Amino acid sequence: MAKIRKNQAAAIRFGPALKALFLCLLIAGSAVGYVWQKSQIYQLRKQIHQAELRLTELGRDNKNLDDQLADLRSPVMLDQRAHDLGLARAQPMQVVRLPEPSLTPEIKNSPREFVVRQAGATPQ
Image (cartoon, rainbow, N blue to C red):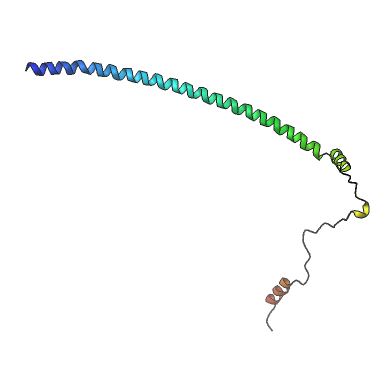
């Protein structure tokens, strides 16, 4: 019976050591997780800042391109470019004006209309 008591005493002494080890691992794991999470937050903040800088740069480039396009489309600039290329304004005889088509076209005696009238007519 002395052996049994010896084994039980070792088991009783081993239990608190396991609890302490588990508690230390839990605290260490939490600390490592906290540091990793803070590192991820820092990296994401850095990426957001870089994306905002890029967005600002693209917005500035877009505004510059819009201004350049407006300048190129202006009548003064178009006349100047045409003059530089040796082009002149069209003479009134060179301009052909086309009439605006009507919204409801007038169709007289079209084959479809003829077929509809035939189908609607009473047989003789």
